[in-house]
Length: 270
Image (cartoon, rainbow, N blue to C red):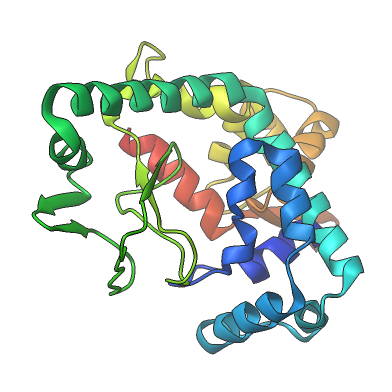
């Protein structure tokens, strides 16, 4: 796995918690402002959130200087996120944005015709409005009291079958929820080609062909491309954290990471 992907995996592991500083509210104004806000995270917040992360998923020693505001690590994080965004979202940004805009239009229509209760009820099945409480399917058991504060609803194209919120209840309340299935471009005429649109047809074929593990030579033969081309595609997939690569004698063996397996599984279930 590339260093950038390794760093992001350490900060956002498959665990019920990841630091809130990775998703600053300024990101709603675009990637540039979001990364700038991340880089400017106060040291006290970095330390508190990394301490909480360490309790559920041990933080590697080489990441721990981040708790003291290490500027080199912050620079590396922002650069890795920018590269990940370009590789994974760049090719399909307009399609994803269109799906999100469609969901926002749906919520606005629900609000206009039935009020706030109809809009909240429409977020189901991950949420159930039972006045005065909004019950949400969430990875952790958590109570969030608004106490007069507003609740920002954030439609997410990549959110799974549950919603999520910020871990720190003192931060402005946010609810990230999966967009409605009717708004997904995968349901709007792409005939199941979502993964191809997301990462490209050849790269999607390479990812699927890796399966339980294969070499570069067999991979090239399977997808009908040259070993050099297959190697370029596996480099991108590895940098994005979707596969791992190791040398076995004269051969180079590729395997799916949990993230790569999840992406393929999600595609199969669409």
